[in-house]
Length: 280
Figure 1: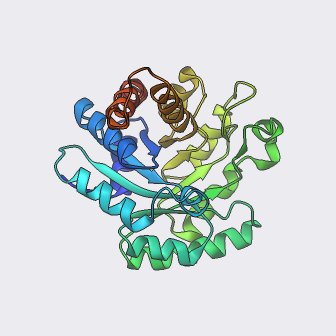
Figure 2: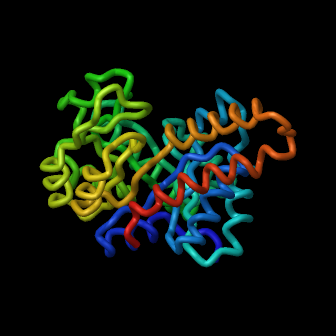
């Protein structure tokens, strides 16, 4: 089937009253596992690259990652999305689109509302000409190791602003802040479902939930029904990868050639459970 536009996948999710699942990936084993299980379960999925994993850790390059996802997606029957996660660098985003990314996120959440709108609008203008979708962020999703970020209502998305933000920027989806945070949670998060309902009632734009590792499933099921159409998962997926490498490296009789298959087996077990959250 090949790569499908992320906007199309999110529309499918919205029509099914659920959320597509998007996984941050580092390398071939992670991407291969995601696409294999998506095909096995007959569910659309989105593979994401987080720029910091490129800039700080040098796992891959955007052009290589995009080509890898596209190559693995071409022979499956389910829709596979390709997305560049958080970036605030205009030039980097444009380069990633030219390297094959059909969806990108511009994150202007740390800026003033006026600056966020202005910058997002410019990214959207160029991205749409180049044939790519744009996810923006309104409000600010903080970090789970700073517990206050989860409950700081000042960082939450304001329902009364969402409609104008979407209309003024032309973005294709909006990541919102309703009580989630990036990383491992120190306290169980409590999503502000009433705020989500108000946001969803104020706009037709697909809504995105970041900080997906550790949110209780019962909260997610409600959030998906109330308007979340894209759900990002990274931290727990990376941690499983890391733990599997450690276990395999210390396993008696293990050799290097066993590593990819061991990693992919563990990742697929996890993915079979996680992808069931998507009711498409």
